[in-house]
Amino acid sequence: MATPIFKASVPHSNPLLHSLLPLLWTGTVNSVPKKNNLLLLPLRASSELNSLRSEVSLCVGSHLIPHPNKVEKGGEDAFFTSSYSGGVLAIADGVSGWAEEDVDPALFSRELIANASGFVPDEEVNYDPQVLIRKAHAATSSIGSATVIVAMLERNGTLKIANVGDCGLKLIREGQIIFSTTPQEHYFDCPYQLSSETVGQTYLDAMVSSLEAIEGDIIVMGSDGLFDNVFDHEIVSTIGQHRNVSDAARVHSLDSSYDSPYALEARSKLVFET
Image 1: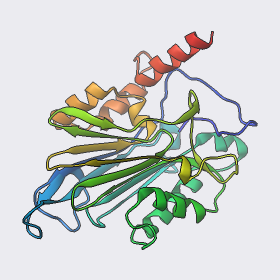
Image 2: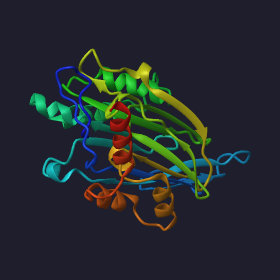
Image 3: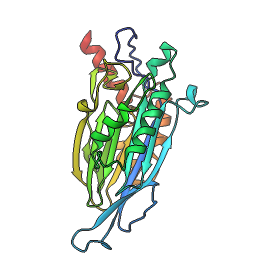
Image 4: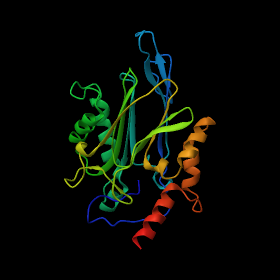
């Protein structure tokens, strides 16, 4: 992630091409419950246990594509999936600016996600993604910061989402995006982030959403490396053609002539500030 630390001592940069590649989840809602089904595709619904209302679960698949310069260490993003209830997805994107402080940006995001994974069944969490973020952040001792998003699907179809920063989620139904999270930022290219520093955000700053998912819905969830490089209409058309949208993100992120969503926003911000 190329965004700066929200910290006055770290310089801010505005490259027109955001070349960090994405962490991508794609999930589908389907009709037969699969207890260990975690290969990001559609949601599945089942009426086996409840004749009045179908139950749903996630069928999940993922792609983690580090920046070419970070392949050897596996990138700076971290994630987990869980089959708990209808399924849980979480992504944390380590803030690259920490490398200028001689801190590995991956350490914070990995510990944060490891803690979140362990707290999923905690009674205090009670299937609340905002509480999960609170407990995971409080238990994280590594130096650094990260943007984060957590999505928790209940068996009754309720999808609960909490995000801090610019990791995002889109829900696609019948070829249309019917819901998108909104990025949070202090200023262009400096998103909200959980941090080891007191200057950072907390779970209270999370944007919380809740919506009803139905059989056949497709969830696309990723770091900013996906959404900075691929437009919404490309995501929808790619999903419709059963190809991996991360392939488009990879190609676009390495093409300096491509006007990506990030490049267009950067250009508009520069014009406005001038």
